[in-house]
Image (cartoon, rainbow, N blue to C red; front, side, top):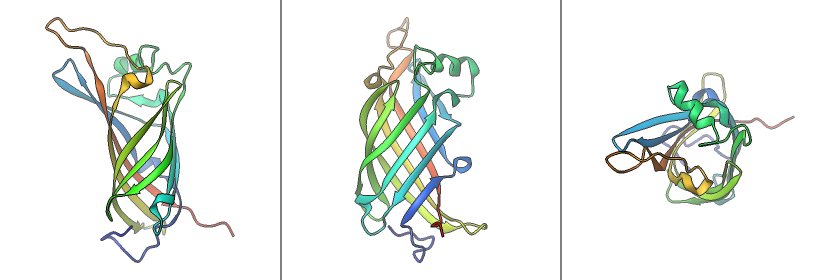
Length: 189
């Protein structure tokens, strides 16, 4: 893994997601005419990056499902309900990587188990490595942007309503948008 930011920084090591500077978002089509964007405000994650052997890299994320936010509280409350994520019974969404494939120096594919509403499916996320820097506080910080498309029905998230003119209120297809800033952990002395 190299970057134009600083190729002298050793990227390998253990990382914690900087949740204040990361975003786990999604986009779904509504009423077949517009897109609704949202995300999760509360999550935590770790990663192990291996620059020499990227296939040995791993990542794990736990999302507090009730932290879903779409900019509209009524819509978010509906998403928290049994119609969608059933957060009373399934308070967490998790992702655990199972494989990493290097495409080129800046692009990777991470495959893993995504568990939503008690159902686990395998997903592959395309990631772009956006750089590594030493921040003003002396932390080594790595950045990644990820994208993938899911069919929400694969996880049993199937609620919908027909439209009078045809079609459905909510698309089955959901695009995930992931922006990660991760801080390298210093070895314990």
